[in-house]
Image 1 (cartoon, rainbow, N blue to C red):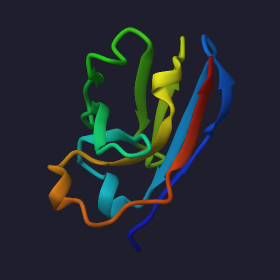
Image 2: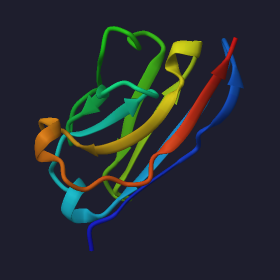
Image 3: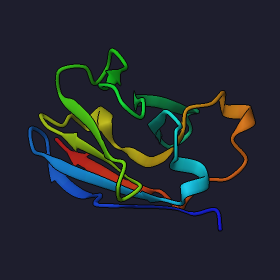
Image 4: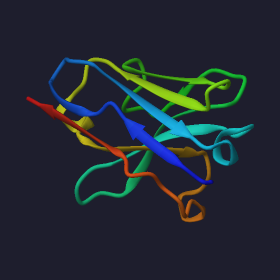
Length: 117
């Protein structure tokens, strides 16, 4: 069964922190580079951070130094620790394997992150 379930979003003040979690089915998770994406209202969905199965995280310039991606291969889980949040981080956050966006046809429901100024 193909499944992606994101959680952990919420409303937080600028400068605050949130930790997002993603539970993925094995068919999506196993052996794949996993990523966190986000989509703000009226904007395209963008890749925020990604992590290979046995390596360390990589980050987009807008979140580098503030966000940390991690994964638990035994549990098929991906996490995103978000610190020093800014209003421009407001978006729906999704996890998925790392592929070009037009190739990704299945998405979870995402989790809303709202950062107030």
